[in-house]
Image (cartoon, rainbow, N blue to C red; front, side, top):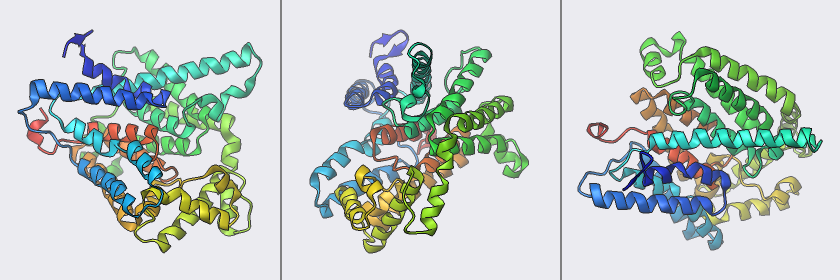
Length: 406
């Protein structure tokens, strides 16, 4: 492929994936189609006689997509089943595409993620300032008004991953002062996004990152895992402090709503007044379905089955919003029963194991970030989640045949 400014057309196509995900709609699908065409063309012209480079653990994700496919056999809503297959095709598409001999695209992933998130958040910050100063409309600083068309939880997931790679995986040529500027931008933006899941996940991962410098990890593994992580405890400490301050100042009321969740857990008659208490109710309903259907209700019937039970129990908050289980394990359980939950668990634990054995601290923390978000959101049910997560994990998983890694 002809080089453009030192990079191949395929590389630029990969780098367009993250902006396409942020834009949403059909842009992401079209971009991935272009990526596939360029990747296959390059493989056919230059590498078709080479061995395919399968990533360790990637076949678990292909197996999880296989459950999506098989789940149509006992689904009554076939339109929903077909849509699900389209949205989640990245579960097999990206592992297969990246197994093709050709360009290693990990650097393209980090470049695309880091700069896309930085540019988008900078624009949202300037837009909020414009509304505040010029239009005297101060409502653009918080939650969905700040995140725009991207749901705050998914934007927080992207932001958390981008910060993990700041300085080592992307923005390597930035001066230290600019790295600090981006750190402040990310920390303040996380508080303004106001996603409870995103803030808690980012803080937990940041604390784990800091703890990797401490003795309880064991000297050898601490050194190995830390080798691929950015140095400088001061920046991580400042990030944690700024996230705490901005979250308290901009999104304190959202965290106060979490008390309503405990009320719902202890009193079935307690009103559902927030997203936290709403999640508890859908979790309880999802567990009820899994108990009644140990092999699930099918790929296409998850929301219809939930809606029937929401309406039966007069859960207006959930039924009006047509809420899914808001937990990836429960999502898998409602759709495919215990086999689905098992395959999902093995896929994520496999990624953790491979990261630990390879001493890849960045991958280890990216998997942790995914697991934490999966606990409170069905992250593999929308493109901004499944495409991003599969791309992030697949490009970093070690090769099956270590002799191919050079």
